[in-house]
Amino acid sequence: MKPASLSIGEARRLWLKAQRLDRETPFGSGPAAVRAAIEHLGYVQIDTINVIERCHHHILFNRIPAYRRDDLDIAQSVEKTVFEYWTHALSYIPARDIRFFLPAMKAHRVEKNRWFANVSQADLRKAVGRVRREGALTIRDVDEKLIEKDHPWASRKPTKQALQMGFYNGELTISGRTGMVKTYEIMARHFGWERPPRPATERQVNDYVLDRALRAQGIVSLDSICHLDAKRKPAVAEHIARRVKARKLVPIAVQGLEKTRFWAEPSTLEETAELAHMTHVLSPFDPLIIQRKRTAALFQYDHLFEAYVPKAKRKLGYFALPVLVGEHIVAAIDMKADRQAGTLLIQNWTWTEHADRSLHQPEVENALDRFERFQFDRR
Image (cartoon, rainbow, N blue to C red; front, side, top):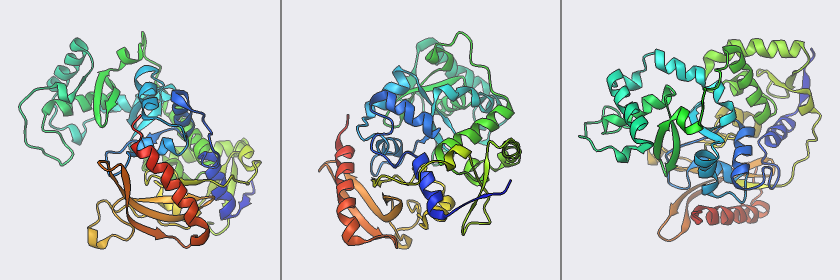
């Protein structure tokens, strides 16, 4: 099939539309909006950095203007429409998709994992058994002798690693959070299963990964589909070839990016390329930013995440937030929250080559005001 030709601008606009950053309230409000947003995006990344609002709340706020943190708590702990597991990082995932993650959980049960090398089966049985007998618990509920850490991210409580091992192998799930403190529960009990869902086959998982990318990205490449999961590429490439042959996917040639092969569903190419003029202060972990090479290719903007870069070598700042105006990233603003004063402190403001300062500064400042109000509204 002859590839369809798109300009970089057309490809970029299709991605923005797929990310639902081109309209005011694409998912409505309340816990139902959280479910709808995560189902559409496929996952929302969780991260521990707290210099401003944590990224999972930030990502949802940019797509749900009336978002409240309690909405996510209700979706996870009460309505149970989302759950936590690993995609390319720890993420909130639609509960409807859990069957596609059961094979990964099984693999954790049968394969040795270097992160849990110090956790014995007896340790695991003890931790899971306690949750089964006593009910959901957090690591704060565990009173035990502290040990020296063997890794900067490890816990000084041995039980924490056992609980994490139970989480990754699917015996436990995270039934709720207070900040970054996780509550562990027996997975079957949390979801009320009489029988667990049937695990997806490997072929079904590959189809799921492809469908998830098509829905949330508009146009896809092997790299964007298999972000940080390179071993899946050969199988996904076979799925793409079958769909192209069946005319369910169209090959795309993006002008100026001919070395990268793209694909899209025919219906995606029929969409109008017009965008509403929106301004968003984005998280560096937003799906639009986290795939740095894709962002650089389609936005001509190289985002730098410099939290782990020595201060003297930083260009944008410790935790710079890209600012999207319309279809261009016009600035990167390094901020931190002064929680005592209830204000955001701007550490560094970098305009990009796409900025028209006289035009964009008022729009960016209005977006910063909205973000600041959200930052300190703790509902």
